[in-house]
Image 1: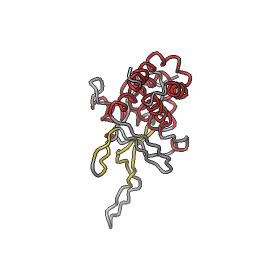
Image 2 (image 1 turned 90 degrees about the vertical axis):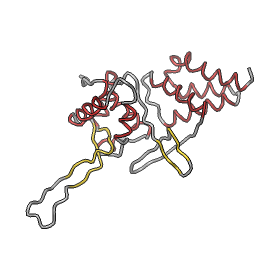
Image 3 (image 1 turned 90 degrees about the horizontal axis):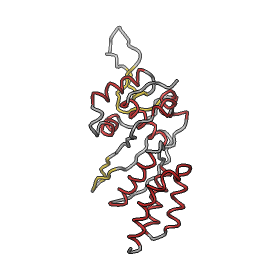
Image 4 (image 1 turned 45 degrees about the horizontal axis):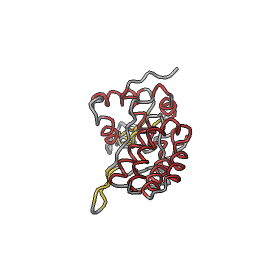
Amino acid sequence: MAAQLDEAEKQILGALLADFSERQLDAQQLKKVYEGPKVSSLISAICSGDDITKVDFDIAFDDLAKKKFIKTGPWRPYENEPGSRIMVVGGYSLKEYACLTELGYKTARQAPNRPAKAQRIVNNLHISGGQFTNLQLAAGEVITQKMQSSAGADSEILAKLIEILEKQGQVVSVDQRSGLLAAINHANEGDGKTAKTTLEKVCGPVWDSVQPVMWPIIGDLLKKSLGL
C-alpha cells in the first residue's frame, strides 16, 4: 500500500527524485548519504508559491526523515573535550543537503505520491563577471556533467516544454533537456522536420498526448525563422 503523504512531502520527494534522475545516479547511491540538493535550495523551490509555507516544509522534511524516506548530510562526529573522562561516540548531520533513501525512491516513484506540480531546483552560480541562473550543477563521487546554455526567449520556451512533460508525470533528464533545446535550435533554423523528429524522440510514448500543446510552440519559432 502506498504511503499517505501530504503535498509538502510529495514536493520534497519529487524534487529529490528529479535531481537523482537528472544526475543519472544508480541504486548504490541510495544505500548511503550521497550529496543531494542543498536544503536551502529545496526551501526556495518548494516554498516559492503561496501553497506551501516554510513551516509546512519543516514539518514535512522532519516527517520524511523520521519515516526514513530521506537522509541529510554532511555527517560530523562529536568532538570530545581533551582530557574528558567521558568519551561520546557518534555524530550528527549538519543538514546542509538532503538525499533519497531506497525506501524514499520507491515511495516517490509511486503514482499517488507524485506532486500536483513538480518543482525544479534553481541554482544560482556567480562566475567572475556575471550570475548564471538555472545552471544545473551536479555533485557526488563520480559525475558526468552535461550542460547546455540557452538565453532569453529560448530559455523561456525550454522551460515551457519541460513543464509540459512534467505535467505528464515525466522526470525530465539531462539528455531530454538537451534534446528539447536541440529541437528549439532546429526550429530557429527553419528545419521543422528535424525539430519534430527530435521532439518525438524526446517525448517518446507521451508524444501523442503532448503534441497538441507542444508543437504549436515550436511552430511559432518556425514561422518567425521563415519570416511568416
